[in-house]
Each structure stands twice: as structure tokens, then as C-alpha cells.
Length: 155
View (cartoon, rainbow, N blue to C red):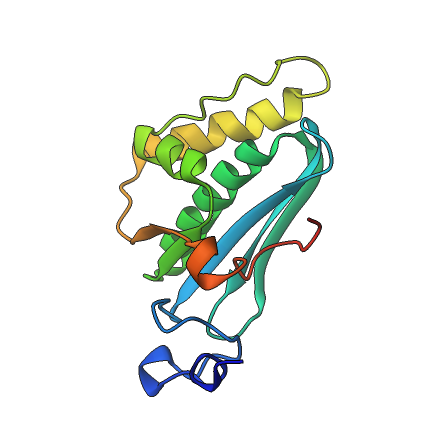
């Protein structure tokens, strides 16, 4: 085990989590989990400095990609509301692409079972259209850094 990764440098803000030196500790990590696809979906955000859960949403019927997208928007909106500027890490290339396009490009059927989720998506897309993203959004490199700290650990 690499001692350097277990005891981060001062520039990593003495995080309680074992982070790769390439990861900024003054950041939030988001991730989603879905039992089946579609199925019960939830997402969360973890503060990399403290290891504390910043927020959790769900479960609600949806897909993993939708959860990843909503987790990023939730983190962006919360940061703006609280006047926080931190890096956001996500391991979802798809969700990051959807954020940049300001649209959730899901193919999930819109029906009675997904109506509440589609309302949340509509609000998230509206937020993205009416706000600017002022924080770095970085793809988590799972191969190099291990599982993202917001992972639900169900693999």
C-alpha cells in the first residue's frame, strides 16, 4: 500500500479520505446507483475534504445516467446557493456531456412511473439554461484513482 496516498500532502487539505495525489481534495464527488436499468435510482455527493455526505436523493424510478446527470446539477445548484466554489468530480462521461449540452438526452420512456423523475429533469435542464457553470467539472479517472468516493459500493 502506498503511504503517500494514505497521508496526503498539505496541499490536499489533510483530507480524511485516501486520495491519489492527482485529485484535488477541496472538491465534491458525485455518483449514482441504479438497481436495474431502469430501476430504483439514487445519487449522492461526498465532500472529499471531510468524507461527509453533502446530499442524497432517491430512490426514484430512473436510470444510472439520469442519476449521474442530476447529481452534477444538484451539486452545481447547491454550490451556487451556498456561494461555494469547488471542483466537482463525476465518473460519468455521459453525464458530463449532457451537462455541457445543458440537456439530459435520456431515452427513458416518459410514462406514469417516470413522471416525477421527468419533472426533476425538466427543472435541472431549466437550471442549466438559466445559470452559468463557474466551477471545474472533472471526469474521475477510476482506472488510475480507484472508485470515486461517492460510489455506493454495489458492484
